[in-house]
Length: 155
Length: 155
Image (cartoon, rainbow over all chains, first blue to last red; front, side):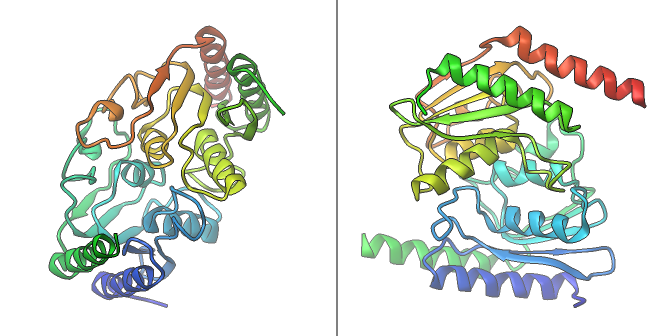
């Protein structure tokens, strides 16, 4: 299956919705290769898998690498609905993702444009060549707002 | 199996040796519960699993959480031979590890006592209560030095 990065974000938003329905924080991610082939798609699975590291983008990168038979995703694009946390941002450098496209900004938990801004550190060896932030930001943020509001109300 | 944290570091060093023999960067990790029961042990598996996130401590925490049926390892100790990178340091906060004990310092790649020093950031919500750094540092560093020297010589 071939997708543009816009279609991949649409798909990631749909995966995030699916996560919310399953009681998971709504985040979805897609990995595309250089021709736009979908290598992997994933959503958050922290609660269901009892795995605090089962963030959408980490699962998607692991799947994509398995699919390729290589831990290096050097020519690939990662599309994700939320700004990656430090764990996922560092994983993006370990997997050598070429391009990162993300939706909602995360001033508290993000590590790309906020907090430790990992790709800007001098010791970061394999930062993505390109980062596009805030794509469909309003929808991606709204999914998260609705989810956390409902969580607080259930309290 | 019950271990002291010293025995766990001994075990982690042995796992790191095993990693080196398999061509993996020599890092080993053990997770203990509050009574010192071993919940999980792991070594690096990046090359063999084609998974750039398959660092010893991340694998050990995921195993321990599966074992417990909970993504929270709130009362647990993580013993690892090398200072965790930003990915693993952030995962330590996601899994809510109570105590971190590590061996070799990593001024370039570490994120606990070097670089972004993630546990010291104001947005870090679940930092470990206790961090003990540099335990058996000389042996842990030596394993890494020997491994990377041999790698350079093989070219």
